[in-house]
Amino acid sequence: MNQVIELLNAHRSIRKFTDRNVEQSTINTLVQAGQSAATSSFIQACTVIQVNDRSKRTSIAEWSGNQSYISDAHTFLVFCADMNRHQISCDMHKADMLSGYTEQFITATVDCALFAQNVAIAAESEGLGIVYIGGLRNKIDLVTETLKLPNLVYPVFGMCIGYPDQDPEVKPRLPLDVILKQDHYDDRDDPSLIAEYDQQVKAYYQNRTGGQKDMSWSEQISGMLQKEARPHMLHFLQSRGFLQK
Ligand SMILES: Cc1cc2nc3c(=O)[nH]c(=O)nc-3n(C[C@H](O)[C@H](O)[C@H](O)COP(=O)(O)O)c2cc1C
Image 1 (cartoon, rainbow, N blue to C red):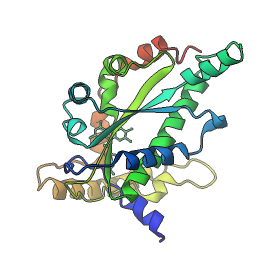
Image 2 (cartoon, rainbow, N blue to C red):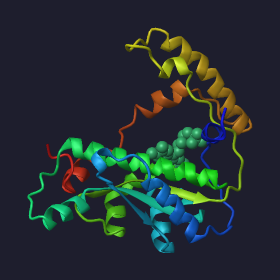
Image 3 (cartoon, rainbow, N blue to C red):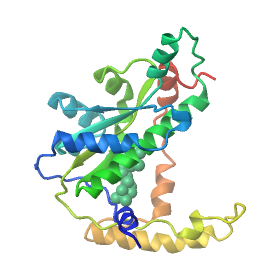
């Protein structure tokens, strides 16, 4: 296995950081590595807001469900799907922009995810730890207002970056046979494979929490999917010019 694949396979989210400084030049390098990701039709639809302001960080931490590492991490970035600069480009050429397509929402969001994952890998290759923060979508309207995001820009997720002050175990992933299908979709073996995997996840949680958490993957997922998933999102995105058609 080469070193890049070893690095990828060693990923684990970090939620406790030392107060060691991360140079701005390093952050710039990470964000530039993000820019190198593939981008749908060259749209380059990701904008990154580095949130330095302490009070903004505290508010976002609270809105995200009291995730204190948003305040504690050296760096906090918000990755935004951005079609505003495309509006600017159309205006430059006096062209009417047809916006609001679901397809555009997908491409901008995918661009952002690919960009962010490049940042994550680049950070980990520098010995930094990261955790994504989807929690900021709990109060996406307040985050949008705080970051002064214009129409056609929405915050997809945040990312805490800093030097790790913990060394959690790598979380086991689903068996390859559940994920990689040959020629067509076949889930006949999935129930038994998931049941086996459940035991692995239970052991992982038992070990991580000193026996406190006794939960399998399918239990976790079935619990999660009995709750509503941020039902405000559709209306919010539509109000910002996305998902009109
Ligand atoms: C888009 C996205 C949003 C996430 N949001 C949060 C979050 O708000 N808080 C958090 O602690 N972890 C968050 N995570 C981290 C996941 O919980 C974590 O990646 C997953 O449990 C797998 O664990 P690992 O990263 O340690 O392998 C998020 C991950 C992704 C990809």
